[in-house]
Image (tube, rainbow, N blue to C red; front, side, top):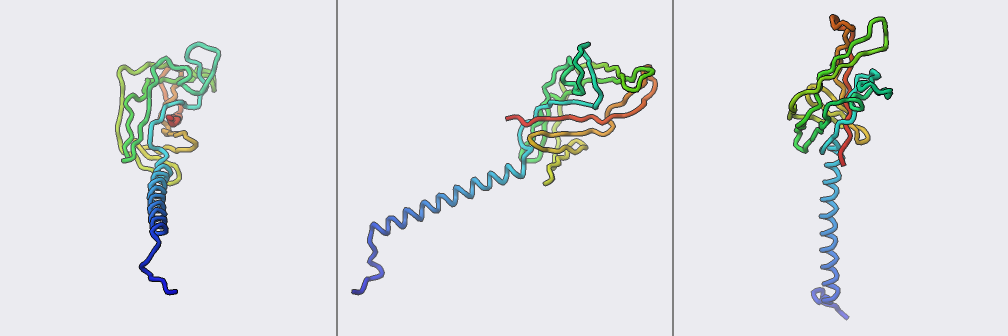
Length: 185
């Protein structure tokens, strides 16, 4: 019996068309999800980052408490509202940067007793600037490099804080300022 190649069972033909459309839909959906996933992997910095630590590595107790910490944010009387917002187009914005005036003095006759003075900034300071991202997790902005690791952004400003003698007449050393940000959910 000879079968005409153009004589196809309509049920089989509909099944074949439905299967083709499903495969096409799944392929397109998978491609879209894969491209979104790749963007997130390429840009783990995109989003908001809350300032959680501001330290020069010196133990402090600003509020006359017995609690000692190296994180000024644990002891500050200033408002801390700093959030860095990184967008996908390479811009980082801070609308309320934490920027108190900090004076650190080494107590006379001591090698590890410091006197901290803090003056909160009036008003708000902000910035917007470009950032660039490297594949190793480094982010460069504002003339420095930050490192993103485990939903934490660490930025170190080299020799940013001057340490004075007790009389404030001489700078005796400089300390790195380390800022740590946590990724907002």
